[in-house]
Amino acid sequence: MSELLDLAGILVFALSGALMGVRKRLDVVGMAVLASMTALGGGIMRDLILNVPPAAFQSLGYVLVPIAATVIVFFWHPQVARIMPLLLVLDAAGLGLFCAVGTEKALLYDLSPLHAALLGVTTAVGGGVLRDMLAGEIPTLLYDRQLYAVPAMLGSGAMAALFELDLHGWPAVLAAAVLAFGLRILAMKYGWRAPLASGVKPSE
Amino acid sequence: MSELLDLAGILVFALSGALMGVRKRLDVVGMAVLASMTALGGGIMRDLILNVPPAAFQSLGYVLVPIAATVIVFFWHPQVARIMPLLLVLDAAGLGLFCAVGTEKALLYDLSPLHAALLGVTTAVGGGVLRDMLAGEIPTLLYDRQLYAVPAMLGSGAMAALFELDLHGWPAVLAAAVLAFGLRILAMKYGWRAPLASGVKPSE
Amino acid sequence: MSELLDLAGILVFALSGALMGVRKRLDVVGMAVLASMTALGGGIMRDLILNVPPAAFQSLGYVLVPIAATVIVFFWHPQVARIMPLLLVLDAAGLGLFCAVGTEKALLYDLSPLHAALLGVTTAVGGGVLRDMLAGEIPTLLYDRQLYAVPAMLGSGAMAALFELDLHGWPAVLAAAVLAFGLRILAMKYGWRAPLASGVKPSE
Image (cartoon, rainbow over the protein chains, first blue to last red):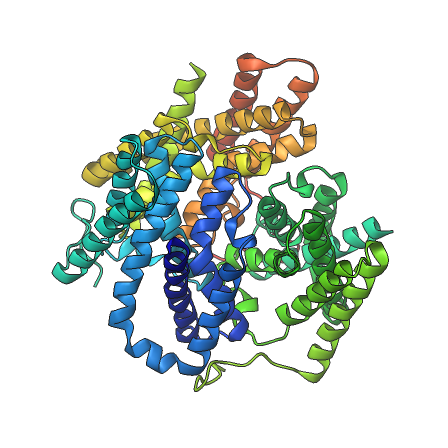
């Protein structure tokens, strides 16, 4: 069950990477690289920092799902782009899941709750940051004022708190993931925005 | 012998990095950073993922060769640029060698054949991707439609297949490297191109 | 004492990251990411290469100081920008300290003096390179011809030489840091410049 959820999250992130590849007119190799790095980059960063071999290089599904996403977007990218509103909801689900799973893994490797939560956020947003850097753009996360990292922080914080209360395993992961997912959806629905430094005007 | 080949591959990659530095009008520090990262970046990524200390920080030659490449390009870059056709052939040789060596090292660390081949490709192309990102450009690998990663994939796949058949050591590495090298040369000669997603027009 | 110095170095690097965030009109999340990566990125690279868990994910101060820098710059960035000359002096101190500390840590993990010095330089300049890449710019280090990496190299080299002479601990670190700091200050004062490759014209 939790593996299926994981692969679903990877699929959505990989689709977003492959679509970025089409938008930047990359070839099929570029699409596959962006799809893989978007989907797996955050987890690879997490595992490098935990000093364990990255899960992406041990699991078959982690390799095949980004390839499948590349094939889908290669042939049907107009249709995939058309269901973007649905993809944004699924992306929020991936965000929630990855921050919760990443935090739990870090806690199991004995990081403090604070550091584990930070690594959970890294897991959730790292792939997207890498995608944008590879595509030659400033990472969306840094400037677009949407609340994306903040829901992940709160979800990761909740996961760390539950773990400290000895609430482990998938029910805790699910609760933290749902919290981050819900906050992300609310942030999109109500247009909540991250503030700019005092006196800085929005750039549009 | 295999060490000499390795250093030759590093030299060619480092020359390409230093030349990029001249083209972007970087200073000598920037040239040395690009030369080193182009030559060593792929291997460092491989070793970080294998969770072993990067070979680049243990070998004397790996440090000195990029410095030598920087010095050569610093004083004689017009001459080096003039032998570019030769450099492209040597680069193809480096590509072949690095994908085969990287795949074999990953197999020796017990990765599955599929994951080892992917890590072999990462070894071969990672430095060039890092070079382009440092120079503020979208990695050539992602968009230029030349077959560069694909020959590396086939060479890495061949290395993994030979290893599974218990064919180890330098003859297997050489065979896989020659395959990738030959495919890369043929791809350049006949202008084979990676496809764009359906309906996407080439950007030129 | 050495921990206080360390945190002071992190504060200055984090301020420079957060200021870059304001200059690029990033939101508060982007400011915090740039502040953290500028301050901690070099040390994280060093620890990944040494194959040990990054210190940034074990220490409380390493997390809180970049957050404090973000808050300060968020509310008072005009004032912080006004003390830029002072910040450049502090940055030179951070550079000196980080190259010496990074080199010593690498030596304690049995790297050769040459490789330890290179890793010390990486520690000192890696965060700034990451800051510029995240902000969508070519790293200043690569092109601006200021002597920044070179004082770090000489400081790291001095640290490695002292260590070889069995001079360990904070007096050696301090001596190496002061050397790099002094050279950096002299380079700024007298406008010493890194050379361009032969025949390349400055771009301004």
